[in-house]
Image (cartoon, rainbow, N blue to C red):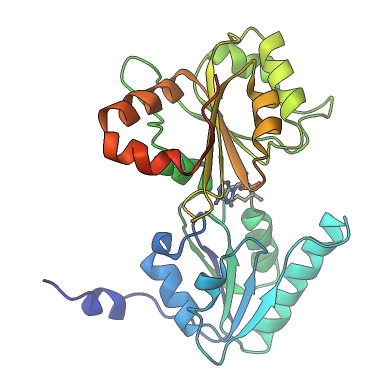
Length: 275
Ligand SMILES: C[S@@+](CC[C@H](N)C(=O)[O-])C[C@H]1O[C@@H](n2cnc3c(N)ncnc32)[C@H](O)[C@@H]1O
């Protein structure tokens, strides 16, 4: 067996005064990339999102200071400014800084905004990709996101702000009839599904919600577009969750039927199989 050591030893080094904006993947440490893991081992300051699993943080260098940067007090913009100010301050103090974000740092996680601010302040940074929860949830729930003859595209969209009049054109997404993967959708799920139905997406379009994907507490709930809100409410499924609406979801049942052993394991984690 080939050793990983030569690969790891050739990875870039986290320099003093540098910030790595790194993705921790969807949750379970198994989905960390080697580069994020290497950053964790080298960083002397780890500024991390609230959703980062404690088992991931435990991989940090033992002398590293762990700084939580979760949501506080309903003031997202002020807090975001605080976080970037702290990153700049740590970098200017010569620290090796890992800014650890859930999933991928450039997917609905303000990584882009943080990178722009660091660049504007002349702070060296590197973007370390991570496995985004929208894609990891599908694999973890046995939902193939693309299938020949079923879809040619995938829509990744945030449900945040979906209740605003100037928000997403849900009718346009309904017309596409391609799988819609929703991040941060639990709060506005009723408004989103109503807008998709009003836009002409068939009520019997298969749908699923996957909570805490890849973690031991993972839950998968299957419904239809029409029954999604009620089934989610009844299941007691809680955030963080990814919602997917599209015909590809139907393949999950086929896969489970073909893999009886897997189906037996999965039944224990299913909140519901309604719809
Ligand atoms: C602020 S966004 C950050 C997304 C992240 N940058 C990514 O690439 O996955 C947070 C949302 O990601 C989704 N999410 C994150 N981790 C998840 C998980 N383990 N299972 C399901 N959804 C997850 C949820 O929709 C949650 O509301």
